[in-house]
Image (cartoon, rainbow, N blue to C red; front, side, top):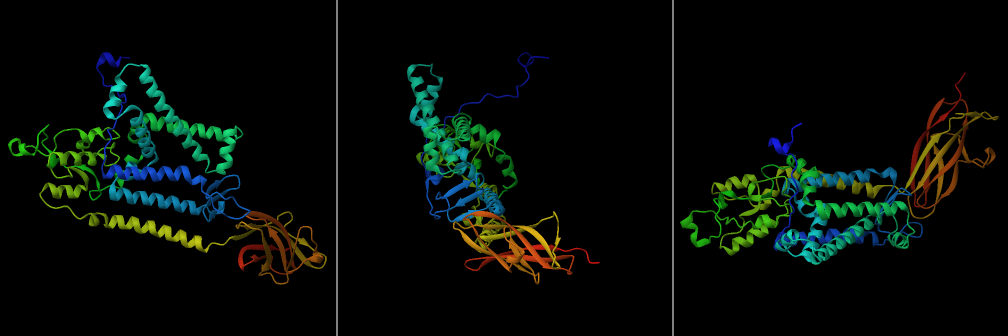
Length: 481
């Protein structure tokens, strides 16, 4: 086999070029600060918020209780059989992402994606320990020394602390946060807890501290998927080449007429601030996460050279053609409110309203019944036929509830529970179901013989407050002669 180095063939592997984005200030940078602060606060603080649900339920505001198969979100409690609420939330998240992409491109990637948020946080830490772009570049090229070692040690120590806090915050969503935190610090938590924290800390450390833009460009599938949702009417970060070209270095407004150049002075400020290291002037590309920091940088330069802002700006491809021809772009509101985005928004609202309607009308009581098959029926001495069932009563409130189980659609039938007798049978049975629990109740049903071989009826349960539920069942009899 020939060696690539001797044959002159092009290698398919390109070594990563470190990206040291320059700090910039502007409206989009301030928006990123706000989104990052809100996102990190929600993530780290939420497990510590309390919500009083009474003596029989946990008081953590947001809790995914896998041991008891419950999901608590403030006043809302989701049971396993109500997983359609989670599915609805996922559908809303997906449609919302489609809506956001069709309006402003990859704004989710640029502002709220976890990879972006933690990478942005780590880059600010890096500026704190190593300095801004130029200082970071000089430090990276400098030989190892005590000063460089100290800076690297400080930076990686902060990275590691943030990563551990990130992994720890995640597991607090699955158990009582104060209790689990005390167990972890005391070395009394389960191995699963430590393994989860370690795994998440390692991934945060590597993805946010080292891989950074490579996750967005190579690992994440979203840049490829988004092309199906973008069209010529979507707002994206765009370099207006008809205005900026041809470029000229170092000139000022006074030389425009003489040199015949565009507004771009080729200062590379847009490249210096880009967190993925791309040049937006090369056109739309997979590395652009639509964070708009290049807009902030370019606007500052345009102000200095006395040219209008917006050489790099949010714009649609459709408006770009109009502006290049000397026309005026459509108003922002008209750009956003178009049939495609309205359809997404309507669908998003419809799913949300449907979930709210179902959530508001749901019962905190549930009953199901399973027929015993060994044997299917028993002939009693008085001519009645007995069937046995396992009735499951679900109490979805954080308090014990007395429930009354009765029959409908089975004339002359009586019921009794295991431990009772035919003589003590009546038209209904009472039982108390513990709070937030599922109780299994063995029930015997006796009905007159000679009726239908397979007769449909219903078990009905009623609790305090007149809340009720019913489930269908079948009563078996011997085949008529």
